[in-house]
Length: 369
Image (cartoon, rainbow, N blue to C red; front, side):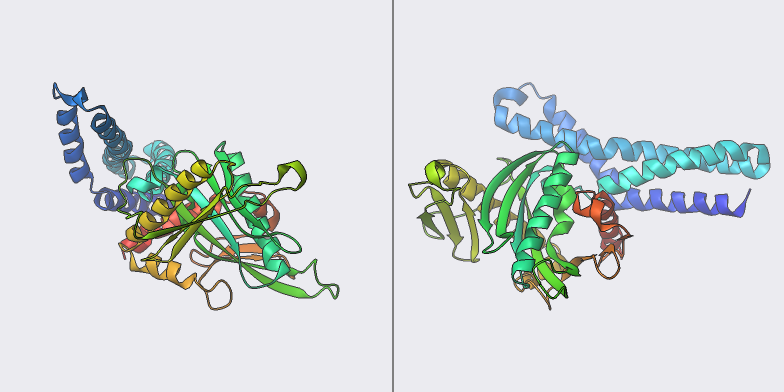
């Protein structure tokens, strides 16, 4: 058997063993059996809400256990084919075909392994805020917002504008949108942090190169299965204000926009997309719950918590997630995974899957160092 093929087989076997341990297959199989037993109880549907939560848990466990069991079984088959190929070189063609398919299967399970937390399946709130760089940063924030909107459209996800504040000359100072679909948060969670743009500024008459920063913050849109303990009466201050509009008959003449400030943490959220103050309040409350839940979850990982803390300074000195260079060279490079794309334009048009997936696989490696 050729040395290259043998090395590929060994690498695949190691990745399968790693996934089996990382995802704790035996434990999840046990959980799946317990949930199945619970669903077989005669009084299971007496409490519909609890039953739906159990069904959702069953689906989540099956989505992990099924592919991983298939992978482990394929790994056993691979071992047999390796032995055949060592005895009979004519078997190498079948082994090569199996390795090619198995590589694809392992890639899929590895990607799924990075989205094993309950909140990963949720939709997401995407907040973009301009940082240092004046008008350039406001323009850059708008470019980033468009990038995420285009990414969502490419994948057929639903979009909703929650809040937007226009820049003084161009672009936006900050904006929040909701992207709804399965595993949106799981895919986008690595986007939180500073994004840096280097280009010849279209706002500089001297044609000089400028660096602009914008910060991205991703939070899961939680459903009723997630509990967040908030004392709305004592810990949250509510302010209402008149929502911005396009002018003329579209100007909002009532204080329908809502801003919520969580005293203990200082987290601020706001919503003005609806004409109804009641609807804006409900959306703002969901956003506040999402941010507080995400902060609590980040305590599980000191590195993520530190990253979000560093985001208080949006500009030089803050943690940079990705660099977008338009001059003199042209490329986009992730500061964590070193993933690099030579043509920035498709990336800015929403083609960011290569960065999302490389980050997710990088986190799987980091967790097991």
